[in-house]
Image (cartoon, rainbow, N blue to C red):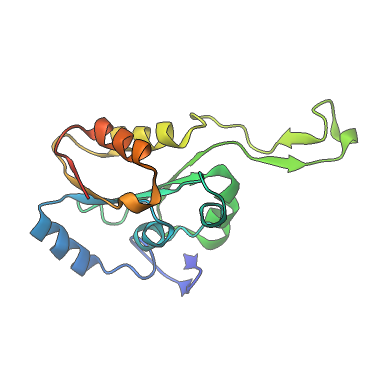
Amino acid sequence: MTGIFGPHQGEAGPVFNRDRCLALLGEAGLDGLIATTPENVFYLSGFCGFSGRILRGVHALALWLAREPGRPAVVVPRSDLDMVVQFGTAGAEVRPYGLFYVESPAADGPEGPDRLLTAPAEPAAFVEVARGLLRDLVRPGERLGLDEAGLPPDLVESLRSELGPGRVRP
């Protein structure tokens, strides 16, 4: 697979240091990591989007579990799916959220000047897609480290409540 820094294979992002990450997780008593800042999402998954860097309220999240090092997962804005396709995500499971519109000529059809480019099959809200990802992939009892800096406090609290007390550490 090719990433923005050239060809890379396997797990997480092209700059990811698996051995160091596993050692630090072991020391902290954690089973995985949740990244929310653009830099840490890239580090864990290889996903590099632009929406979250320029628009407030547009978020991305990466989940990396030590038991499945070759399968990171990301929640990305639907508007950045082109970045996923173009630059790759090193084998990550990708779950998009939100809506994405594209300008089209009025003669295109009855929809008017805007038409939906992709129809979401999952909930449109970031928090619902992120909570669903945690429900689907995190096993009971697993403890995760959370990079809180990329989310407002209410979204951080929502993710913590999804996993339950004592399972998420900053």
